[in-house]
Length: 78
Image (cartoon, rainbow, N blue to C red; front, side, top):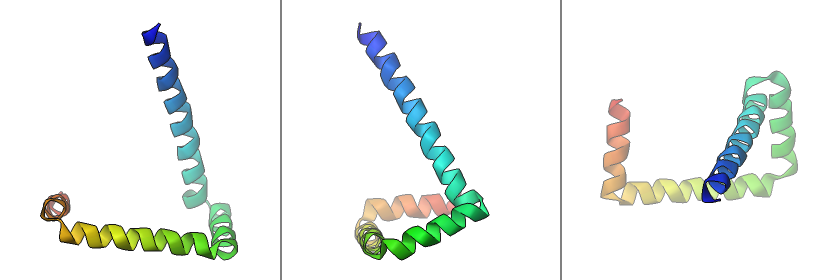
C-alpha cells in the first residue's frame, strides 16, 4: 500500500517537474516567451519588487554566513 503511494507521489512529481520545465523553456527560450515576461513584469510590478527584495535578503544572509560563503566560493571553483 505504501509503495503505491510512493509511486503516485513520484509520478505526480515527474508530471509537475515536466510541466514546470516546459513553462520555463517557453518563457526563457522563445521570443514569444520574452513578450510574455515583459507583459507579466509590466502588469505585476509589486510582485517583482517582492522577488527582488527576497533575493536581496538571501544575498545578505549568504554574505553573513561563513558556511554559505564557503559553498559559494567552492561553487565558483567549478
